[in-house]
Amino acid sequence: MQKNHLIELLTQKDNRKKKSKIPARLDFLQSATGAVLVLFIMFHLLFESSILLGKDAMYALTKAFELDFVFKGGEPLFIAFLAFGVFVVFILHALLAMRKFPSSYREYSAYRLHSQMIQHEDTSLWFIQITTGFMMFFLGSIHLYTMMTQPDKIGPFASADRIYSDTMWPMYLLLLVSVVLHASVGLYRLIIKWGWGERQKSKWMIKAATIFYLGIGLVSLGAYMKIGYEHRGEYGKRYTVEANR
Ligand code: HEM
Image (tube, rainbow, N blue to C red):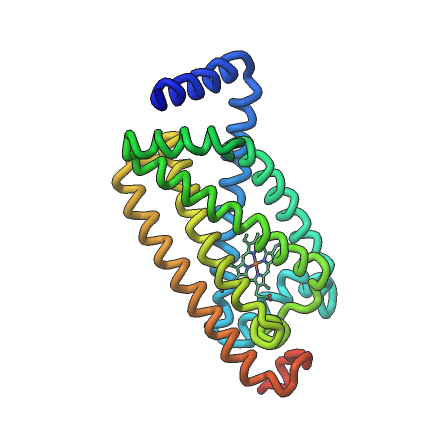
């Protein structure tokens, strides 16, 4: 009985798909926006870890993003523009992904049954992606909103004050875990879907990347916490290279 119901649901979806080319195009757009976001986050977490090389390194990188080599002193508005651009891609990707959320409890139960019946790894990965995607929808929006509205408050002390004294670290911790898992599973599924690599090899490479990015993310977050703790008495005071020689 339950099996028939499942087959009926899946066939209905298949028939709907055959009628139009739009789902294939939306699928491609979802993969493309996902790939852009994976690339972005890979670079972002690396840049973020510049704090491990010291406050001067993180400060210099922040100023470079403010294009201080063109505009003397840097212009934080460029960071706000960049954040807005990323926000558009982020929301588009989330909207496209929402098509694949189970739309009712009936559909959810059918997927659960499906996953139990075939015990397929890819089905479990899909569950990880839905859960982390849901978390990121909120956490990523909070973070991007902060970056769009306070682009001038980025730097070794400003970021550390936000993370430690403004108690944003739990948000960053959850965001870090969900974004790394989501990006890893997403990239793996992209590789398999578009035939970019062999399954077993890709799996190992992605596992290694997940550990690497979680590792540098956690250590960087720890470094910001330490700086924020030491700087708590001077909350709000900005970093300058000269004053910290
Ligand atoms: C252009 C857009 C973005 C900018 C300018 C930006 C900038 C920053 C900055 C400056 C920090 C350090 C903490 C702080 O100052 O508050 C940070 C941390 C972080 N960001 Fe972003 N971010 C952007 C987009 C994103 C997106 C889209 C995600 C994921 C959805 C993300 C995930 C994270 C995570 C997980 C951390 C903590 C890193 C760690 O643990 O070391 N960011 N970001």
